Image (cartoon, rainbow, N blue to C red; front, side, top):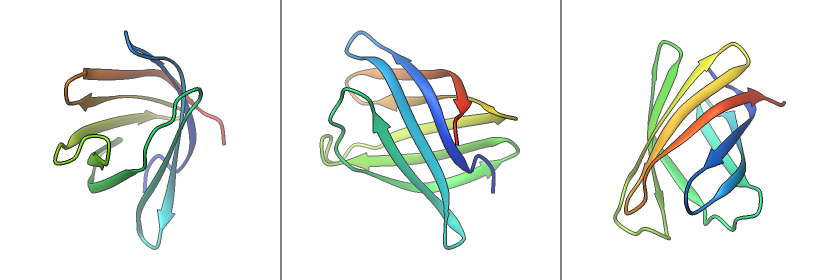
Length: 103
């Protein structure tokens, strides 16, 4: 399993600017995720269809805030750094860059 741990990513969009903490953990042999965005009340995410390809994880997420819409996610790990994207319906691509392992 790749990317296990807690990651800090900076988010900079026209709707939100701040820090996001992504925790990736082993949930009984499958990937588990939690998301904490400082200064924003984010509804729970259901992460599914996680695929591992080299040093990249791809998945899709669902949230009650956008019923029936899928959010494609891609995270690429390089040692203790991470970068990626989340394509959020009606908002567009959110880039996660300059991410670093914090735990």
